[in-house]
Amino acid sequence: MEHLKTLLITQARTGSTRLPGKVLRKIADKTLLEIHLNRLKECKSISQIVVATTKKTEDDSIVDLCDKLNVKYFRGSENDVLDRFYQCAVKENPHWIVRITADCPLIDPDLVDAVVQCAIVNNVDYCSNTVIEHFPDGQDIEVFKFSVLEQAWKEAKLESEKEHVTPYIRNNANMKGKKIFNAINFPCFSDFSKIRMTVDEEKDFQLISALIDRCGINKSWIAYTNEIIEQNLSAINEDIVRNEGLLKSIKND
Image (cartoon, rainbow, N blue to C red; front, side, top):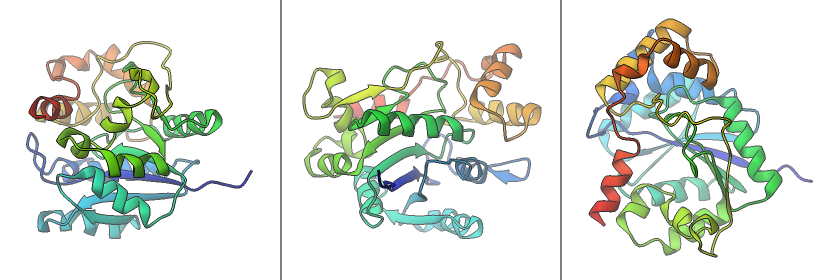
């Protein structure tokens, strides 16, 4: 079987409403985006990594960092992230797309590889470890065919479907009783959904700082999870709602 190109797109911008400039905040003298990208470079199943950012001048700093780290970037729409992803992807002509967000600094490259392999082996339209949210928030991985992204780009109408890239795919998949796309969940061996290692707010940044201070920046997702549980670090940010941005967008629809 020929090697099919797998493009990993991670979305990053400085204009976060809850924690502006969060991806450029530093821990141990490295920005969160740098930690994130260096971890993703360890993925074995990825043909290409591209950072999808916006055309706003405030995101020039993200482009500068990409140049420094020798990572490709693409600049597109700020709010229509589905269009940003599609325009980014169409240039690369991939078969598979992996979607990550840059507010997940400690994303696990081995877990990314596992979800990619699950998608390829099962030849599904969409595979994610978030269909059933048992992995910690901040280890979110979505893998889908480029043809599926293109169909979503053409057909999605709701603001929430454009702002968050994959709701149109998820909402029209067999897991929601629909027939357009076939999707599967990449399962977790236990329910860690209460654990947060994403960065949406100041408290999240404090937790990631404490975690990196204790464990460094090269551990597995389960090592970080165990540290959070054993040291009760969840007390720092357990009051924050998972997927608050998406829930807000759906409400606005």
